[in-house]
Picture 1 (tube, rainbow, N blue to C red):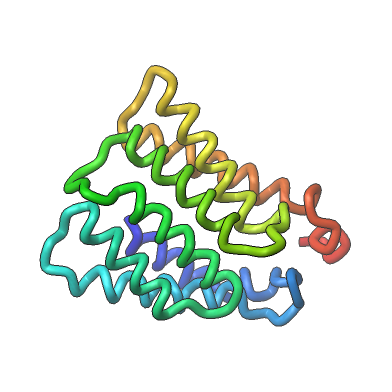
Picture 2: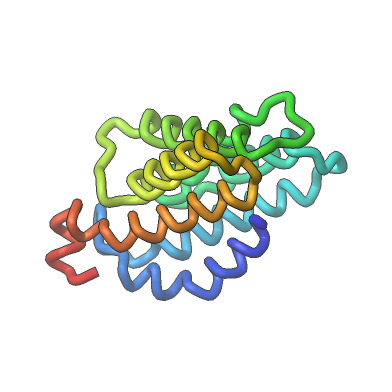
Length: 172
């Protein structure tokens, strides 16, 4: 799943770079996220034990060691939250995933002195909330939780210009 996400990010990094106007218009957010994700995957591929906690811990370590820019640091905090929530679990279900996303969001917010809505923080928060709502409902399988999270993340991204004036002013 993370390898597929990294592949999509690689295809989209230049587009994300072009949209990058916050906190400064330096045009490197997509590249920084991609480099951070690659570092996460490289670390995860080195672990001999493929259980959930081993992979999550490796991804968190890889992201921390390879974090680039603000987006990479935030992403590393998201992976650290996931790893913390999955500690001790060889496998996980939908409820575990939803809880891990909530902790990942909390970790990302607490890692910043001045969190700003309309950013990746909002996207992970909305995705986590939707995952938790789905887990609390009538379907608790991992696929339905991921679908709820992805749909909410997509809506959150579309809404970011309504939350952050600099995005609205730049038309992104």
